[in-house]
Image (cartoon, rainbow, N blue to C red; front, side, top):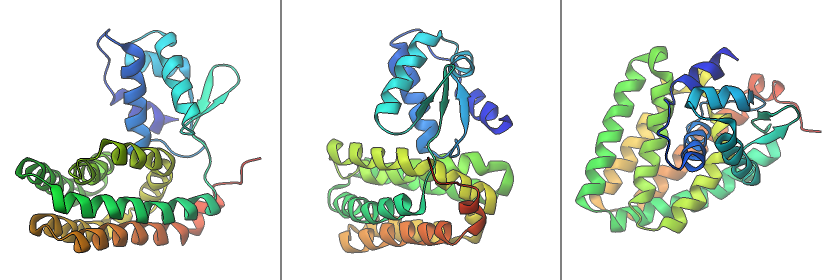
Length: 238
C-alpha cells in the first residue's frame, strides 16, 4: 500500500476543468506506465484525495477503466488492478508483437523530423534514468512507455495508437511487478533493443524497426514468463 500511496502522490492535483476526463487520463497513465501492480487495491477516496477532487469524477473515471478491463470494482468503493494469468499474458504477447511491430514499421516509413527528435529525447532520458539504478525505477518505467508511444504515434494512425493503449492497459501492471521484483532493466537488454529501434527509425528501415520492437517485447515476455517468483505471487482469478 505504501507503493500505491507514493504513485498517487506523483500524479499531482488536477485543475477543476473536465475533472472526470482528467482523472481518467491520470489513472490510465499510472496503469499503462506500470506503476500499479496486479491485485493492488485503492479506495475511491484515496484516489480523489491524491487528485484533489471529489469522489464523483473519480467514480466516473473508474467506471470507464472497469469497462476497458483495466480495473476491477470491489465492494465498499474500492478498486483493484486485475490479476494476470500465464495464458492471458501469452495471448497479449502474441498480439503485441504483431500490432506494435506493425506500428514501428509504419513509424519508420512516416516519421517526421519532429517525431524523430522526440524519440531521440525519450531514448536519452530513458538511458539516463536506467543508469541511476533503483532511485529512478519509476522514471524508467514512465520513460520506457513514453519512448514506445513516441514511436507508435509517429506512425500517424490514432486508431492504431488507441489499440496499443488498450493492450498496455492490460499488460502494464505485470511489467511493473516484474521490473520492481527483478530489476531486469539493469541487464541492459531494453537499452539494446531501444538502440536498434531508434537506429531503424533514423534510417527509415521499416523491417528493422519491426524486428527491434518484436525482439524487445519477446525478450521482456520471456523474462517475465520465466520468473517463477512473479507467477507464484499471482493466483488464478476465481
